Image (tube, rainbow, N blue to C red; front, side, top):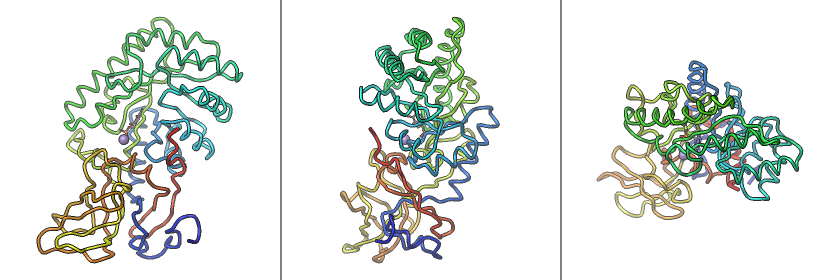
Length: 377
Ligand code: PLP
Ligand code: MN
């Protein structure tokens, strides 16, 4: 293999995208660029700061493009992800999950030394005390936001206990209290717009009441961060967040394509595919491809075929390494036939690949490494 990536030799070749070694993760560049622009313009219009979540793409090139389009910085889910992004020159990062292990605190302080704008969320006084001690030892203050639990119960402090934690952070000598985070992960995929809107507005009301209570005591919340692709057009109406954390909007996936937008449709387009090839057609009405459990996240429904298969064909998982294509009566696919599928759930699918294949009208124009792939610690 010449170079780092198996498909490098195909860059710039006419129709080269059809010849990729598969399975391959593919970005439809024009659709992807429209998604970046649509979200950036939406936030600018609404007067909101955009801080896209990099856990979706784990790729420095994409983070740089989001920032070039107007994003203030990025969110990272994990410390390892943030370290990779800092290595790539990204200087403004919010860590959206608590960092608690003692050795991780050392890494957090090293990261805080390296980039000018690191922020991390806290959801307990125990963790806040540990961060305060670590920041004192490191000799540099640390920006913190209080993560609120608005019903998901994954992380975040109960709203009624939040003011005490914010008070603690605000008073801690080596912590800089910057505001609140609230992410309603349980709301994002509610399919009906009206129900999602009603529940999201109610959740944002809870966040607002915590902010109001703090402001009464003179504790300001300059950053109010949260939201996702499922609430991007509801959050401005709630008028509580100052910054949006959308992640999936750049790619979309089957899960998000099933979610109804404000007027029936969502302005984001599918821009991410898995390309696969037929490796066997040993059985009538069946074709076996080279993309199985190792090529798609499997937490949602099976991948949706987009191109290369006849109308009525469907994909099923056929093991670790293979997928099955069930074909309508009388149909078959030849060996080497190229198919693409929409990913069921984009973020955990991306984490399975080393690189994106960037495609424009059938031409592979670039390969972008997924540097933070696997950096979950
Ligand atoms: N913020 C947080 C804290 C998240 O966990 C996520 C995704 O799970 C996002 C933002 C991005 O959300 P989405 O992919 O729905 O746009
Ligand atoms: Mn996701």
